[in-house]
Length: 549
Image 1 (cartoon, rainbow, N blue to C red):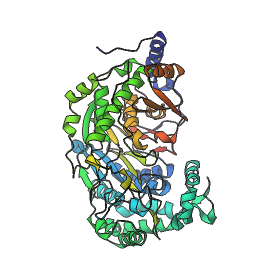
Image 2: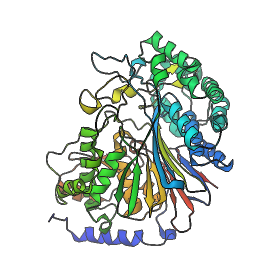
Image 3: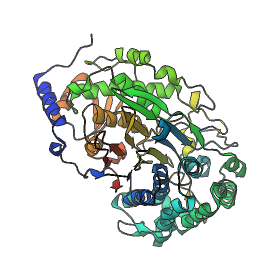
Image 4: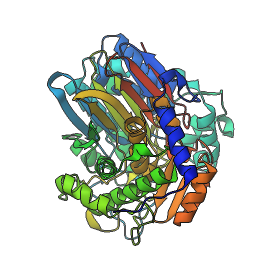
């Protein structure tokens, strides 16, 4: 039997948390952002204008896929630092009719001619992989949406052409990146007009992107992969030493995959399949299912330690086994089996940190880039998606006269192993949009950016909802933490008694600012199992916003 931490202050803390969790919703702790409730449809994204774009589609009679695609194109305009049509992503869809769950993989791929005698560069044309966003969003709309592409693209086109007010968050990122942005003519014209970085309240316009989106609206995905935009990308790469060419673009395909599935307590999990992070999220939760987390307070050392130990095991296995399933055999069934979860859980000692379990940082960079959004329609269909250009402003390359910022995803390949570079291969990342079913009915759609922290934040969010019955906004705003071996990075909002107890276990504690962008920006929606009301939460760590009707 594993030893349990024991002290009277911790027991009192756990008892207080129990009372808080099971009080009526009106008695729940106040949140920085209000929880939003609506009867029919809802969109939660990292920007209010993107959420509005999705809501417009719902009000026009569209479904959750129409709303998610519209919001995804719009957020590519208003969060240009974190995603765009020069990037990639993955979408998980749950359709009530037929209880169908699918994943649309629009991860970027390695150009056929990519070759690096040394280290893959962090930025520049050679760091760019073949973009998948236009293909993936287009495929999802074509197969599972109901509205025409031109209508769904309408809000994004208007935002790019007319402009939008720069938020304090975006202004801060532009300022941080000013030196790089100012050196690239196309980027400087958009983000640093008159030689100065845009400030909060300034209007950001991207006429080149507006025109690119108009061309896609008129001609479909082929404009990007076989037409005028493909030619522009090819020319940019040839002129500047990048690897993407017309053949790479013409050969790109978004892929429909089966999601990874698992269970946590009495809930079913439907998450993002390899080559991304859903497998690690589900594995971590299935390990945690062997422990009664609800007996502890949410911010207790017991709960944090048990979660950290399970998280590290999920990260270790993700790093060892997950790659592009078109190139490697990923043992998903074994990793997600009940016997394996029991075996992994049996390794965890509640009174000490595991020896020789150092997952390393599962993502090479620490950029808090990337964006997530969720959508739910009147029928209960759900979408959770995450998309990215990797680091802030990706490769720091904007294709001339198109407004398209290219990703720098090539750096996500590993030097060797299952994630080693190969032509046409999808590099793995940690993104893990997830849908939760309760009694076989859609209950929640949620996702977050945050690089390596995605693999730890997603289990934490789901545990907050399931183990502690938090509202969606409270679950999102709760303090986060990230374990690496004996090191624990945490938001500086944990109780002092918890920190002392964790230090007593041997953790090396590394505080971050409260509501730190380092920990991502989760957006989620719940459907109440009895009232069927939609309740949404948006992360104050970003410019998140929930809109419903």
